[in-house]
Length: 432
Ligand code: SAH
Ligand code: SF4
Ligand code: F3S
Image (cartoon, rainbow, N blue to C red):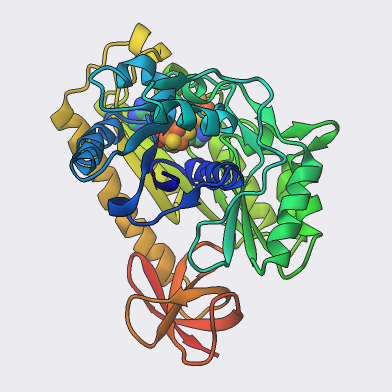
């Protein structure tokens, strides 16, 4: 009864957490199983960020239950939805284990008790837990790129956002354990690490801030590429930009979620910056690194958003000319400040129309951004074969996906390629 299958939903943090979970379970004699039809324990590491994310997982639980027709199976819900919905998930008798993001060390005990037929719940949030001492069991297929979680939780309480409730207060992980984990990655052959946090710029451990941490990790090896996510416009500092500009192995890409281009909406969202501040930060980034790619997140149709507010978002996109964006329409999350204070009053048709307008604009901007790279030479880290035979794929420092014909290189190599053509999503290149 020790074969464990886990499906992971949501953000990169959850991917990193699933790797921690497998590490904890393997120590207790459990094994990772990639085939749901053979697993004794089926779990989902879940996301609550929008309602449709939760609906999808609720649907998945029904399919997990069907597995019980052929054998006894323990079903577990982990992560953000476990934390948000708590006991609700146990009612109905489908789920045996509900474990929040800070309860993973106790999973072996929970599994044992659940195997004896007693449903288990642990949704206690911690002020200290960072899983600092646990070496994650890496799950990526190519062995090239790894996630390293540098902090947990969030103290920002943006009014629309469920994360502070599902992940608890912000805490930074001991910088020496981060450096140790990055060194382990290098030893195992990894060539790229992505440092993860909800607001990496507020990282602080002793007197090490995020700029200091970046520098510590960048110095480990010039062969190890460094990325990070997510930067918050209110906190991203010039010292971080300086460090980025001075280490060639730190990729020139910043994910800087703007959420809205209207100051009135930003204030209601409790984002603590203005449009002008955001544009100033973008200008600074480009001053330090003219070639730095900038991507963003945006929410269409937040409470009380007018056509004028929406136009301000579109004009901000035009002004910044983002290289990429993740675009959503507002989904009210129970318990958040916005849910308590503001009616969700933009009709769904209007939300969808505005979102589609943003997507259409960004599609054009992404294509234009890619066209501007035609003729440029990039150093690309090979991730592996692309979907098309005979071709390899990998990312340039600016995070754009490159594909090129190549019979000689393999995952983990650095190669120089020249951009000869592009689509909105990909740079088509030649090996040089
Ligand atoms: N910590 C990051 C965001 C993490 S959540 C930051 O502050 O930028 C990822 C993205 O999901 C957010 O940037 C936001 O665009 C989106 N999102 C969060 N809550 C949402 C909601 N209630 N409805 C729609 N989108 C939401
Ligand atoms: Fe959510 Fe805001 Fe924290 Fe990001 S910074 S996780 S949007 S509360
Ligand atoms: Fe991530 Fe979703 Fe939780 S975005 S932090 S898994 S709510």
